[in-house]
Structures are given as C-alpha cells and as structure tokens.
Image (tube, rainbow, N blue to C red; front, side):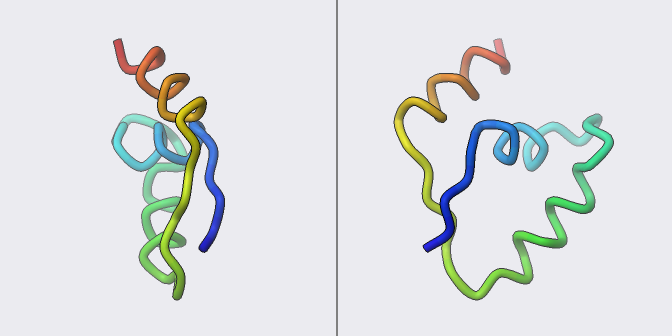
Length: 49
C-alpha cells in the first residue's frame, strides 16, 4: 500500500489543479493501492467545501 495525503486527493479530484494530470497518471501506474487516514480525509473535505 502507498500512503497519500490530502494534497494528492485534492489534485486527483480537482481538474483545475496544475498537477492534476501528472498525479492522475502517476496513480494509474501504481502497482499498489493508495491508503490514507481519517485526518487526511477530513482535511480534504474541508478544502472541498
């Protein structure tokens, strides 16, 4: 598993982020699934509101 933070999640779902395509390609190439924590999800959620 690969640990990711809120910044990665934000870039993956927000197509206006400058690094969106780079993150999307990188994550699609991963051989292992992403793992995050509740605190990262909470931070991600607060940025999306």
